[in-house]
Length: 409
Ligand SMILES: Cc1cc2nc3c(=O)[nH]c(=O)nc-3n(C[C@H](O)[C@H](O)[C@H](O)COP(=O)(O)OP(=O)(O)OC[C@H]3O[C@@H](n4cnc5c(N)ncnc54)[C@H](O)[C@@H]3O)c2cc1C
Image (cartoon, rainbow, N blue to C red; front, side, top):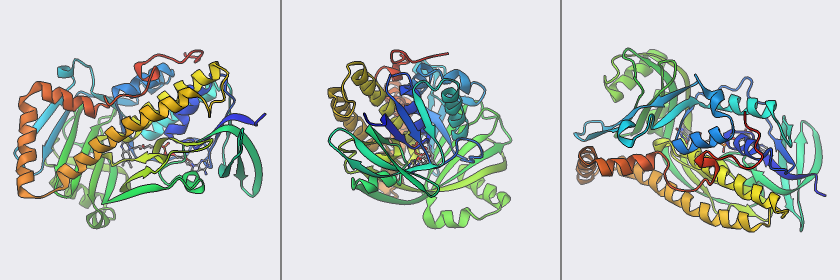
């Protein structure tokens, strides 16, 4: 017998969600991360959770624990700096109470940890430990666990590498990745403005890159400002007052005066996709498979649908007594998911390309496009649907239905 059925390497948002979804599947799970849980983590990013992600967290019993920590998005205002086109996407028009919900990554992570700690099921946890040197065998995969200076070998039926965009395990397995540098940096912060946001989100396309302000529950807004690398190098070191002045100029006065900025951070932006996501009994998940530009807020939402469908396939294989790595369910899910991932990547990458190009004809065309969206409700509904992650995939969990035996509150 291998030491575990599944080893999940990485307890970021993706690894945690996967662990949470599978902890009552009957599979013996081991979750491993070099970090030490949520305490002391200072990720300044937030995420706009699409309705499908909401359903996943509802099915996992995590959603009630997010109450008071999220802000609903009631409308999204899309515009181009210096352009004439603009469009407002309204939740009401979509027949929904909210287009999405914004939460700080650290709050979401803390809620997932809490859910797992309260009800671990068949999950064991190893913190302060790295997974290294995966090696496929006929009926198992072996790997080394490195904790400080101590190494030991464990084996599993399947190793799920949720170890982030740089994925050391993807590299160790030689799966390779294609990479496209956007030559942009995402400047992240929380901002306070003189006017209340009233649940409005803003996506403003500027010549240097898109600038998004998303509502947070305490009246602040979460900023993701994608700027060309050289410009970001001058913006990042500015003191708060100078940074706010630059931001005010780029964003304008829709929220009145921008008064305060906190939680500042910076992320270089690249499109990175694994060339293959599977090597025998090693399977990549989350950012290890695909790392997108944040312009459309799709990265984590895509990964959550991926994880939801994967959990269902593994759960079904477990119920049927099959080896999870060799099951038909897993193979079918991999094929379907590849198509979803291609669609979302094309949508996100297309949006970056469309709004990064300063060719005058194109500038005119995209402003006309925004006007067209503003004037045509069915087109607007379709566009909003793509933004809300209606690209397919995700299975039962993304419809809010629990996998059998999941212990809900
Ligand atoms: C600026 C910005 C804004 C974004 N906004 C949005 C948004 O609005 N909506 C959206 O859907 N997405 C958004 N995203 C994307 C989203 O943040 C990511 O998709 C998500 O955080 C990826 O999570 P992950 O768990 O795959 O990786 P990570 O969070 O990177 O976690 C990887 C984990 O693996 C661990 N690890 C590393 N090596 C090993 C090892 N050898 N063994 C074991 N563990 C290991 C690490 O310690 C870490 O805990 C945004 C991204 C950025 C940069």
